[in-house]
Every structure is written in structure tokens, then in C-alpha cells.
Amino acid sequence: KNEVEQSPQNLTAQEGEFITINCSYSVGISALHWLQQHPGGGIVSLFMLSSGKKKHGRLIATINIQEKHSSLHITASHPRDSAVYICAGGNQFYFGTGTSLTVIP
Amino acid sequence: EAGVAQSPRYKIIEKRQSVAFWCNPISGHATLYWYQQILGQGPKLLIQFQNNGVVDDSQLPKDRFSAERLKGVDSTLKIQPAKLEDSAVYLCASSLLRGADTQYFGPGTRLTVL
Image 1 (cartoon, rainbow over the protein chains, first blue to last red):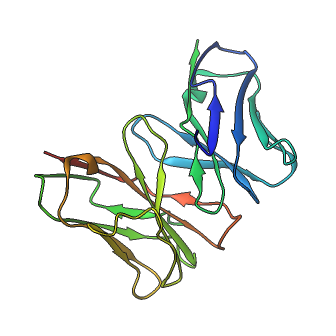
Image 2: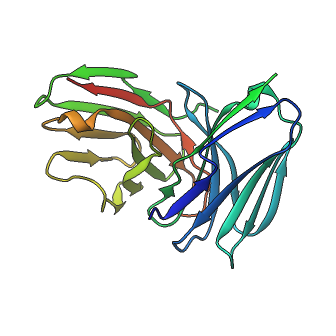
């Protein structure tokens, strides 16, 4: 069992749809990170959160420390949101295996 | 603000050869990370530096991998000798503080071992 697990592994959505990606973790985490990785591109940090909710543009991240669960939401999805989304955290910065998102025009 | 720089971007070597990767973090960032990302997997932390000291290298295969950050700025990661399973993207990241702080990633070095 991985320390950080994500679901779904792959996600295809129509442009404009509301998207949710889930992350569950079994290790102690003081802060959880959501990252974005485009094909052939580098990794960009989207959010770092320790509690509650953060919003940036069309992206919203929430975390429930007690339940060891976090979600990343994308509102009004767009083809340029197509990427791999990764959650990570813990002392050894465990990464989830990522969710590959494809948004179809 | 300049981002995290890495070189080379691509490297192809034969097994049992040696290779070195270089990383220049964002100016002023005390913490530097090296990750290994095998195709289709999430990154795995290899080593974390705080200034020029090692914070965590528990997942670094020390029989063949080594890393240093002598002056607390640039860092090099070396593999000697390389194995086929070392083929991966090696990512460097830096953060201002240690622990719960945003990490900024470099573009990575794609290593192919033949």
C-alpha cells in the first residue's frame, strides 16, 4: 500500500465540467502539496495546505486532517487543464502516482 | 526571479558508466531536494539538503548514488556505475524553508541507460 494514494488514475472530462481529484494518505503530514505536471514539462506547485481550503482561480483544494484526505477541484475545466495532477506530503515527501486529466473541447 | 536550473536536460549512457547531474536552486533557498521519477510513476525523494547538510537520504541507493551541496548553493547528483533501472527523470527542487513550504521544481534531467 502506498503512503499516498490518488483517485482516479485517469480522468477524461468535457470542457466546462467540474472535476474532482482525491488524495488519501496514511503517513503523518503537516502540509499536503498539490502539483501539476504537463507532458514533457516540469512540475509546478499549485497548492500547499495544512487545513481547510485554498482557492486560486478555478482551482480549489481542500484538506481534512482528521480523515487524512484532500481533494483538488477544477471548476469550468478547460483543455489547457490537461495534465497530471499529483498530491504529495510527509517527511519524506511521498508522492501519489498522479491523476492524468484530459479535458476534451 | 530565476527558477531552478538543471543540466544537462538529457543524457544517454551505457550501463556501468558514470553520470553527474547539476542543480542550481532559486537564490536564497535553503532546502534542496533531488527526486527520481521513473516513467509512469510519481517522483521519489532521493535526498534532501538543508543548506550544505543532509536532512534525509534514506531512499538514496548509497552503493551507487552520491550527492553533495558543498557551499550550500549548487548541488550535484552522481550515479556510479549506472544500471538500466536508473533510467528516469531526475528532478531537483528547492524551497525557502524546510518542511511545510512550497517547492519549486527544475525542468529535470532525463537519463537513459542503455
